Picture 1 (spheres, one colour):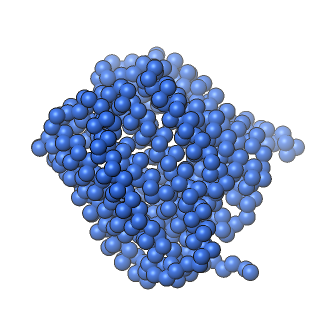
Picture 2 (cartoon, one colour; picture 1 turned 90 degrees about the vertical axis):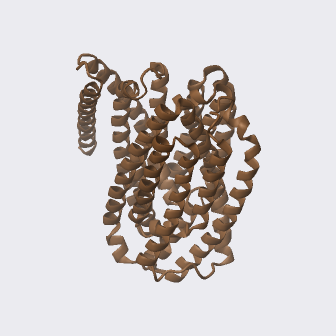
Amino acid sequence: MERKYDNNLIAHRKKNALRMTLTGFVYVVVSILCPFIIRSMMIYIMGYEYAGLNTVLYSIISMLNMTELGLGSVIVYFLYDPVARGDIKRIGAYLRVLKKVYGYIAAIVSLIGICVIPFIKYIVGVDVPADSHVYASYLLFLVSTIVLYLGMPEADILFNAYQRGDIVNYIKLLSALLAYTLQIIAIVVFRSFVMYFCAILLQSLFVVFLRYYSKKKYFPQISSVGDISSEEKRDIRKRVLSVFGHQMDETLISSMDNLILSFFCGLSVVTTYGNYMYVVSALGMFLAVLFNALTVTVGNAIVTESKESNYIRFKKVLGINSALVIWIFVCMSNLYTEFMTAWMGDKLLPFRTMFLFCIYFFVMQIRKSVISFKNANGMWWEDRYKPYLSMIVNIILDIILVRFAGIEGALLSSILCIVFIEIPWESKVLIRDYFNQSLGYYYVKLLEGLLLCVAGSFIAGKACELIDTGIMLGNIAIHGIICTLIFVIFLALVMLYSNVVIRHEES
């Protein structure tokens, strides 16, 4: 049977992706700069341990959010086809299922969240600030999370399925600005940890209001009504169970590191680790904007175009992602310590530890092209055992290595799991099993990227040593320009070499 798709939607694919990317970048800039300012204020005004406690509470809530099971990603995948064909009835039926399940999830998160309360004192350690009101703060954070599950979560899924993630970005941006303003007041004026989390609760309530308003404005014709077949429910259940592991894996890689560091090393170490990881996360957020827009666009292309054209698209995305990762890596390795010195003074880690953060960034981000195409194609079942094996090994290595190596142990455990478990498994599933292509090209690109990172970092580092303005911010600016120039030269040489090889093969 021939499929009929909404040509207007397909024609606007690039426009929608651009809109999502631009609004996403604005949101990322705000969500990097504002938390950076707020974290700095919390450290200097309220105390170093408060930032560590904040990180630990965020980690606990992140782990509770794993009960979401990645349901949203699965439903977006199922909506690609009815959205492309303009089937309003099927869209409404899927949204009804989503809304119903999110209600169950809210109940589960509430129950587990309450059960966690007696264990909080063991997780956060002994150096908890006396006036932090940790239990009240935790409960406020928990309630704000539950509100988001109950407050029209299907609206975000609908916007993403229609490639209107820009609306979701506007909602997140406006609500974040409200929360950041209130958090700054809570820290500077009242110096209250509890009021800081009250701001997060108000943010969640504002998100619900904006979801309702936007849904009524842009998609008034779509209602969460109807039902889907038993076969479709079984398919959703199967994919949700498989994506659950992937969801857990992404959360545990960072959250378990924070919790285990807190247990063995204390909140001060968690704060230092969190400061460095904040930079890694901030840079990753910029790349995430591109891939969030890309995933929806690729999902639409997968149901409307051939595997061959999508493999060509994959190689282009891989090349762009590799170039961005190499550039950021070269800059990170030479600017990281200078930036942390300007920000945190003497709260610094050795060069070896700093470089491990750079390696962690590389292995996390270089695989995003594979993950985006795999997720857009709904391929969670095919490597369903991968995240569980990775999580088990990661937790075991964390417990062993953190006790002896602290922060370096936490980083090493994550890096080893990604390199030897995650990357080989997920690339096999997408490239060899789906695209029916050899893995050699992909692995060569990964190795090429790593070598360019190390070589570029070394050369840029030697060049940066020759210039010292005597002013910290001046050095960061000048050294950033040097790193970028080195990257551009490397990229030009690689592209020149690639063109020579292609011409030689054609002749």
